[in-house]
Image 1 (tube, rainbow, N blue to C red):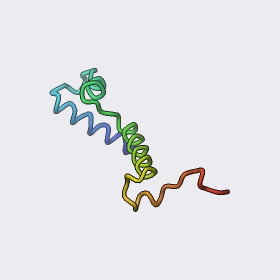
Image 2: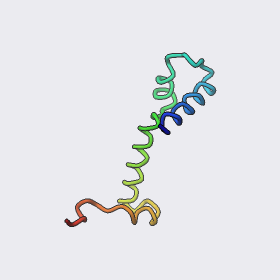
Image 3: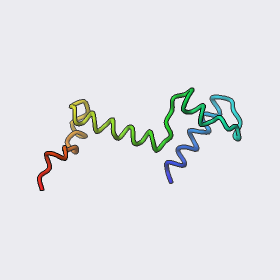
Image 4: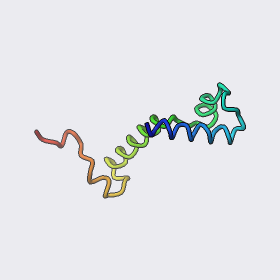
Length: 76
């Protein structure tokens, strides 16, 4: 899955920056607690929710906001 590959790249970059070894067990602690990073699937969900919020509140570009419709406005 593409998110797994992205997570591996992020983990490798974190190891390079933090000068830790591949099998150090504190990598997830370092990612979450010290660098305040979300895992790739969590970050994707967060970004999607943030963009939806911005579209609904007039803070996003018009070309994106045009694709968002409140469920209450949809008629059956």
